[in-house]
Length: 134
Ligand code: 5GP
Image (cartoon, rainbow, N blue to C red; front, side, top):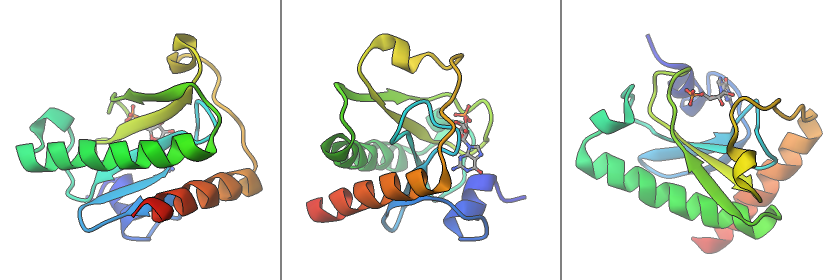
């Protein structure tokens, strides 16, 4: 069965899209740890990130870097934190989280409750920033 992220990539489930190329896709996390919290996924569906083949793994990191650069241009933050868990969704992905302190990476903290308009505004800004870089 297709993962929830494959359904998002295929447009069967809506998302706040940030960026896409032939092999990778980025969209806002629906339960964000910070404004601009983004997930970057390979289009090929593999559960564990270390099971990705070398080319897909390095391509994912390269794409995540580009997306991270786009995020930091529009979301005020000290830097972009990068996390990998994969405990909830069995489709390899990287979390990009705008942070100001190490505590901003604490996954046990309450997530932000953003309104739809806020998600749309954030996604539009990052998407525009990403497109201006390519
Ligand atoms: P992980 O697998 O890395 O432990 O966590 C999965 C992440 O995906 C969580 O941060 C969760 O909020 C996010 N997530 C789960 N389902 C959806 C969804 O349907 N849409 C979006 N945008 N994010 C999701």
